[in-house]
Amino acid sequence: MLVLRMDWQALVQPKMDYSLFVQLLDQDGKVQVQRDLPLVDSDPSSQAFQATSTWQAGQEATSLVGLGIPAGTPPGPYRLILGLYDPADGKRLPTGETDHIDLGTVAVERPSDAHPTATSRMRYRPNAAFSEVTLVGHDRYASGFAHAPDTPLHPGGTLSLVFEWRADGQPSQDWMVKTRLVNDRDQTVATMNAPLVSERYPTSQWMAGEIVRGEHDLPVPAALAPGRYQLQLAVYPSHRADQPSDWADLGPVLVSQPDGQ
Image (cartoon, rainbow, N blue to C red):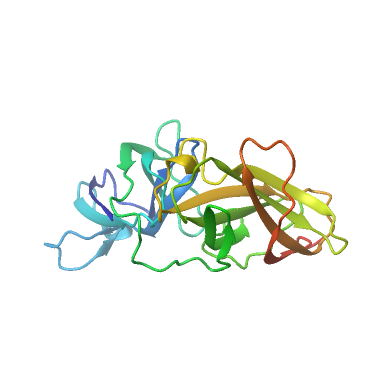
């Protein structure tokens, strides 16, 4: 758990009750952890939590935010950023030339004990074994809708995939993952392949028993017909040039027509 204390001062009386977002970004700029909550004065010395619309010009306030780091987050440096937005429309407040403040780098370290005690919080629990690694859980949702995973996926959109892997022993090589959507005629209509987690944390560096999360994007072709497709996954060594032949079914994915079309 990363705990942040932020001290604020109102330059003028705010016009509304703003919300605060805090994010950890990986080296590719991808959001790995996010927390959104109303911005209030949460100083223990205050009589009550005060929303920003009640702050007076010149008033000082303190907010405390806990940012949980999910088990399995790959070790490495992450950028910590924060910003404010109008919760009515999600529009961020500008801060100079951007819409956030960079708070520096946070180092996430690999746990000394690779065997987790907490159970997976993933929505799907396939527990599919692939040679040296096992897929113990995964999530899938339309990109940007982790908070609402049942949001419809449309042609031209992106299916976000979060995989939770376990090293069943000390991996002897680097493994790749390939995912695909297939139609009812077993034809591939969308595909993605990548390292299980990233090139910066290949499987050969994992410890036996370690749980690691990997996040990937599967683009959905704009011309894809709405319908029900099957999500499949395969794991193969990074040095192999041929395509994997053993696929695991992860369940159906519904691609729907956007409203009004």
